Image 1 (cartoon, rainbow, N blue to C red):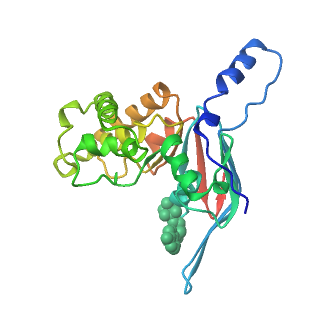
Image 2 (image 1 turned 135 degrees about the vertical axis):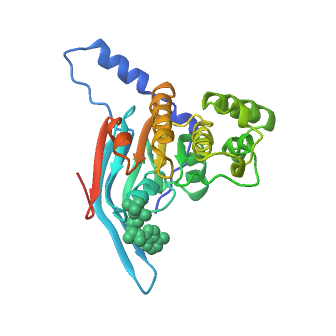
Length: 254
Ligand code: ADP
């Protein structure tokens, strides 16, 4: 398979030019390419004894600036789809393009760098590192991306503050409430200024009132960070504040 290189500079947002050309011409139709394009995506888990075909031939497009919910019954493949869109797992067939990158044509090292620079992940149950403080958890993607410690700490503190957690920076995850952990996970996802936010049940373990505050925060940061967001959720309220809802069921998206 031919491999391409990830070049962060090549991915800088060229969309301003597109927006400009759209605004200059109210009568002309200008087609804006999607930020994410999955084509004929398939995933089969094969453990030798059992074979699970999660889906085959799924195609979807997500445009820059969209906030999209993915809903569907448990086991339908929502997390699998999210992981494929973010290059956390490789598909059995098909392709995923994010901006100009055909991500599964990237070599492993470039795919890792691409994820680190372009994508913010919020995992189910937050997946914070228990032995590190909130601030250290938020700094982690920057340190992995080889940022210097002092500017990484400054940036992480700034994002924690914007998530309303400046008073919890030195707490470890075990010393935080569920809602606070969700905010740390969101801050960690945003710290590297990603273009694409992928969230897997970001409020799945939270009570109604706490969930509502995280939903509002997600909506707010989606706009203020110029994000494109894909959010897997069972929560109807969260789905209802998204621009579009995709239903995944029986291997099909509708
Ligand atoms: P959802 O997020 O919609 O609940 P998942 O994407 O987690 O669904 O899982 C889809 C299907 O794939 C399920 O039937 C699940 O058992 C199966 N599956 C997920 N991960 C693996 C794996 N690593 N190995 C084998 N089967 C898996």
